[in-house]
Amino acid sequence: MPHKVSHRGRAPGDEVLFGVEAVPLLRMAARDLHWLLSRGYALPSSLELVGNRHALRERQRLAVGRCVCSDAALQRRRDHCMVAEAMRGRELWMDGYNVLMAIEAALGGGVVLIGLDGCCRDVLGIHGSYHRVQETEPALRRIAGVVAELGISRCRWWLDQPVSNSGRLKSLMLDLARTEGWDWRVDLDMNPDRVLASSKEVIATADSVILDQCQRWFNLARLVLEQIPKAHVVDLSHSGQA
Image (cartoon, rainbow, N blue to C red; front, side, top):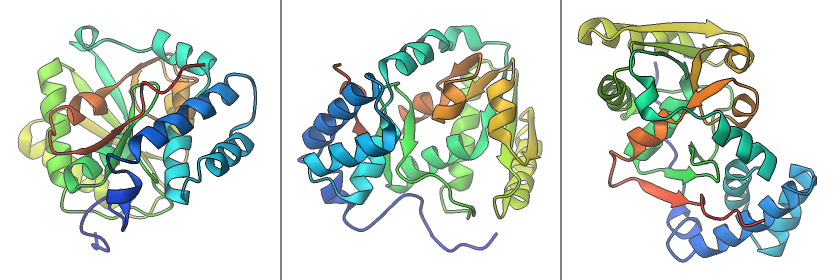
């Protein structure tokens, strides 16, 4: 798997765009966007309005848009979220790239966002191609460690087949699982979002589309993030005051 980048999520200027002085502005923008979405306004036009009002840069707008949802969506996500104690002995279905890339970013110094729903997300997500970084294997080991602590019986990972290098990532994950004795299964699917959204199993994800449709979900990545004290976290979870 060729390395085109060494770390996940870093971008020039992030120290300023997501630094301590920028966080109050991002929280105000998130609060305004939450207000609009909760009153039925569409995300694209609302985000443009909010971004213009607060003079947000493009990367800041992307971040705020990924972190905010309406009151109705927020309540549904809370109602369907599993607590850690309930996960012992259960199988967990993983939204593979969604979970992995957030932890890679946290370990590699990239910005990790905490949204209104408490989920952690990287800024950009994936766009057609995945490249292994220095933090890939450490991230998988961190995830496996938290899974073991929770007593989760088995993990079934779902990866997007159309994404470049998914097959190579699958091989890496299965090799690690065999070596370490982890009970992991890895599936490639043309549309894993559809599979996860309709599944009766508990889903680990921060994907808004899946969260708004799935029967049960678990905030695994957030627990892993809490064990990475040096992560660059931008917490917008308290910005929703509609």
